[in-house]
Image (tube, rainbow, N blue to C red; front, side, top):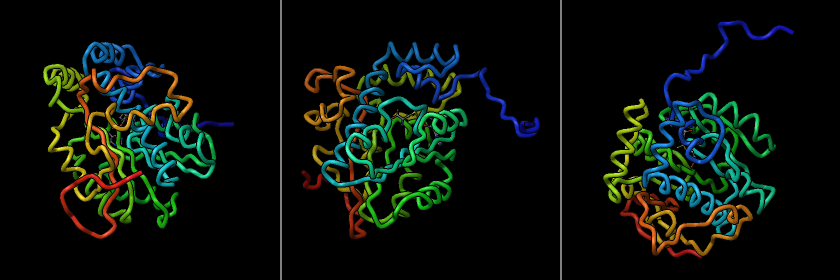
Length: 285
Ligand SMILES: C[S@@+](CC[C@H](N)C(=O)[O-])C[C@H]1O[C@@H](n2cnc3c(N)ncnc32)[C@H](O)[C@@H]1O
């Protein structure tokens, strides 16, 4: 059997660090090169590391919350990174066999790993750059029932994209009212010295990084009702829900009263009527 011709080969650049590989190194994964590891080791010594890991833990908790309390069964992870159990579909599969998950990333190696490792019939993978919101929307509409609730999960990714607020706004306007947004974002409002220094390290390695302020992140949630407790540090978002997944046993959560995390997190539902009002907390269960 003959393989693809050289014109179809993809050459992976191993010479410079890359966001997905650095992140997998920070999370304890295996798919990185030595220059990614050097950056990851610097980040691991910084207060950005707990902000990243707790943001991811919050996003997984958010998926369980949306299934258990709001019967959401369609999830899109925007900038999914390398697979790390529990992935969104792992959390969903604990609760229901009807959930579907679409993973999107612009990193070729991430997409290859995601396709190879996440083979459930209810899991879809697309290699798309989020700045191409038309392609993102096409992928969503191709896989999902647009008359049923959909949750977009943007966790740990908006920080890497200059245009993230415009991307969120475009997707928000295009998707049906009632859709959900799970958002986490690193900030330099807290531990500013650590976060600015980590951002400089990433930028010096060729990885764009944009910590945003509380007001900037709140503005990205315009048009959404935020569920209680609103926009808070990830570990402060309903920590009592920890324990609802068997994966929660794997690592000890941070104590909300003790830790000051350099990130914000929220779950919002887009207003059903087209009211572009200030964000605020909605009643919830
Ligand atoms: C830090 S990882 C976050 C992974 C995962 N969401 C999590 O919470 O652990 C960010 C991912 O976003 C991807 N990414 C960055 N910019 C992107 C873009 N413009 N379009 C699509 N994916 C992007 C990177 O390749 C990387 O895999």
